[in-house]
Image (cartoon, rainbow, N blue to C red; front, side):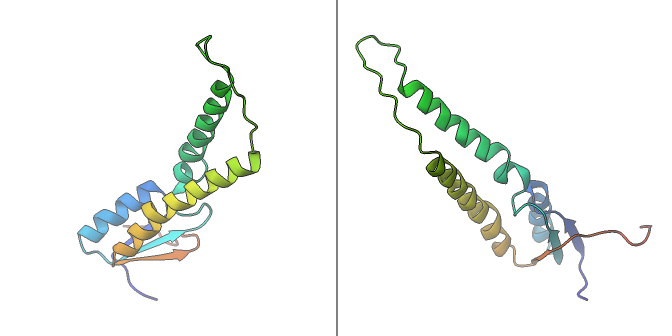
Length: 123
């Protein structure tokens, strides 16, 4: 088994902050991630997708309601499958740009899929 200076459990934003600092210090680093794809909760199932869908709902709602009497509102149909596909494409692109590409640029950080656990008490 390879020897590492630093081991990171998880692949979210905090893990990438740790990996960046480890890389700056030229520490041979292992990142162990399973569960959510790279990026953690915010980019995959939290902040990014929810705000995207909220903005879509905002535009859809207000397209049919104008504050001005001179405008005739036009309520367009919502293509739900397309809305989800667009959200998924946004998340995938961010995951690639903000996590996968960053990880590739950090030459001394290796990523493996799995779970980590401590087997002995650290001293």
